Length: 296
Image 1 (tube, rainbow, N blue to C red):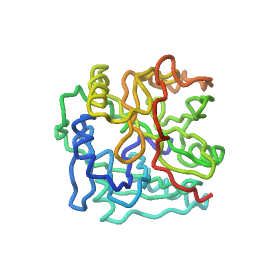
Image 2: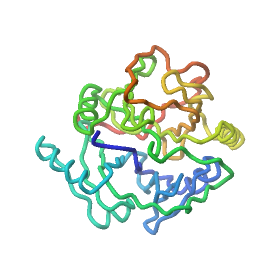
Image 3: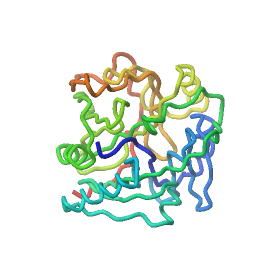
Image 4: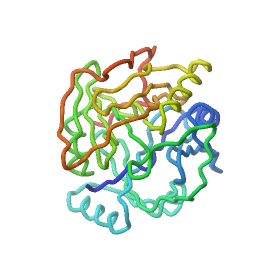
């Protein structure tokens, strides 16, 4: 596979500063305010996993995918060039802001930006959670996953599998159709949902190491009147126990535990007609997402 893990996500939001409290106090992340004014969220010893940049509206700016090495990044650039897919090389300043040694950026068919990088900065033992927590599941499984809205599911599928090298995990057909893709043992690092004329970020998932971590975050959301989008439940495909809360930047955060992992030798693609075994009642008053009009 071309990409190995989801390394980081960048969004724009007029309410970026609210993450300084929301991230640590509710989610157990570490929040750092950069000199640029952006809020960087950490869940492990990596430089950061989520960057919230101040801007006029809620929207996704980029998703960063680790390819593993400088040689792999060069090979990715050669592959993109051969296929006639345009890309730009990240400047030294941009690499420093991302906390990586190098990256190239390209756009998917809807115009969403994806960055292929290597050399993420890691400082062992440096993560300081904002509240008591057992920890987050990262490592070889990366940050977690993103679910993206796309106007053309077939085009986006060809991009993920044909360009970035993802493999399909499964499909769900219900009130919200979803296709799921993996690039490492995590059941999915990205999923797609079709929305005519629209692109953007539906939600980001982070996985914690204990069920109590989920329960404590759930209680904090309830006590602070943070809007829930979906109640606690267990998904039918990745078996994760999770809930969904609305973030200060419009998209949802899925906060989960106990997902299955993919064994590439034995995994088979399945289809489902419901999203969950139990729970996950839709209680949102408005749809989630840092969404905008698509370019295609």
